[in-house]
Amino acid sequence: MTATLEIAPPQSPASVAVRLTDVHKSYGHGPRAVTALEGVDLRVGLGEFVCLLGASGCGKTTLLNLVAGLDSPSSGQVVTHTARPAVMFQEAALLPWLTAARNVELPLRLARVPRDRRRAKASELLELVRLAEVGDKRPHELSGGMRQRVALARALASTLGATDDGEPGLLLMDEPFAALDAITRDVLQAELLRIWRATGTAVLFVTHDVREAVRLGQRVVLLSSRPGRVVREWSVDGLRGADELAAVEEINARLREVISTHASA
Amino acid sequence: MPRPDVVDEPALPGQRDPGLATVEAGLDALDAPAPAVQGRRGWRRVLAAALPPLLALVAFVAVWQALWASALWPEYKLPAPVAVWDVVWEAVRDGQAVGILWTSVHRAVIGFLVAVVVATPFGMLLARVRPVRAAIGPLVTGLQSLPSVAWVPAAVLWFGINDAAIYFVVLLGAVPSITNGLVAGIEQIPPILPRVGAALGAGRWDSARHILLPAALPGYLAGLKQGWAFSWRSLMAAELIAVSPQLGLGLGAFLQNGQALSDMPQVIAAILLILLVGVGVELLAFRPVERRVLRARGLGGLV
Image 1 (cartoon, rainbow over the protein chains, first blue to last red):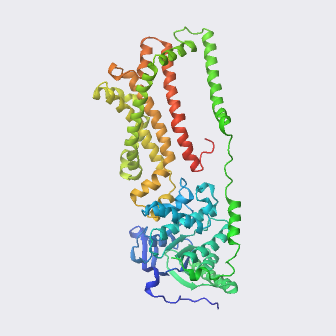
Image 2: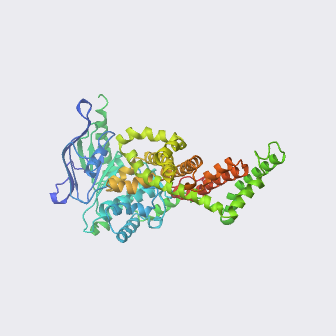
């Protein structure tokens, strides 16, 4: 057996960034209704890095939309104790007519932050993602990895920048590295960890890559598909070498099991 | 919320690669798209752009001159280029040309600007509100293919032969084009952009102002360009049909007078001036704006 724990250590309510309690979400009505999430309980601590793992149809995107406040649950509760959650998508989705710096500034502009402060904040965040020199470039002049870093800076601006009182942030990431090549993905994973440590933002990271989940997360939560339910979670904080490999093996095996149940259905 | 206690702690020794910054910089240098090659600069660029149309113009006049010299048609049907030039030059010298151009161009510009003010909110409404779209979308598209000259008789009967009638015709010509351009521009926005806007906290108004309108700008500009062309030709149609001393002498009336006097050089001169204004506005006003907008988005490399 590996060093993984089935249940993470309990945390006091004060240190919770997001809590989902018995969340259901279905789309449509009557017999044609589709249940995306069924009784999901999930908690992300302040500054915690949690990876949501699941195959297609596990309602990952639905869950992120609920936490982001872009959608509301059919029943159950979603409570956040952080600043506005920021969302990062698989595509960088930068606005092509704005420079990198203006893209980072946009959420601050929407939050009515005065110009001087948002300029300063944007350049600080570009510095953080090591893109200080390309602030006046447009998205089409940047590589895919650079665009995704600008998107990360913009997401950080969205969750951290609008408030001055150091309200804790929350970053929701929907397979943000899935469209990148392997080398860039590897570098960006390391970058994300560095930035996560530097900012102390809580991260809820959706992926279908077990290795990525184990490498990045402190906790990995496995969701079943159609409808999405929490199957199990593992604490994978600080696992290295053989332990990390064993955790990947174990989670992979469980994931395959979950997927297999759909073969007969 | 920085957590200094964690920042410096090498919690994951394998991944805290001291070379991460360097690796990343290398990757950026390799992956970033090469900057666009700068074309020729200064007068050589101007020459390269101006020479082909100039040569075409010279060839056109040469053919015209040759046809005239061959005397296949009587003079009153095909005048010499020089005769047309004399009419233009005469009008320029006695100041009449400025008056004629001013009368028409200022009408077209005012009509166009009013059309923009009307069509922009109308286009937003049509693009974003489904019932409005279902109800009058086809009508607007249909109006675009209706020649605005068809409105002249109605305008004259409603308003009399005056400026109101002319502006009415110009508006009905330009508004559908601009509206349709904006609708098309909004339809072509990648759906991820409004989603990003919502995720970043943009409300309905902010989303229109910061996301939808700028994203729709290329389509909107195309609509504006077409709207200008439609204003200009609607105006010419209106001026040509509704001729009255109290409307002043515009290009359309100048053309009409040429016909009434069987003065072929004046007719051709008027047509050339109408064409000149159309091409001039396209080249001086719309082309540079369009080029800048497309360049900024990494589009239209061939323009």
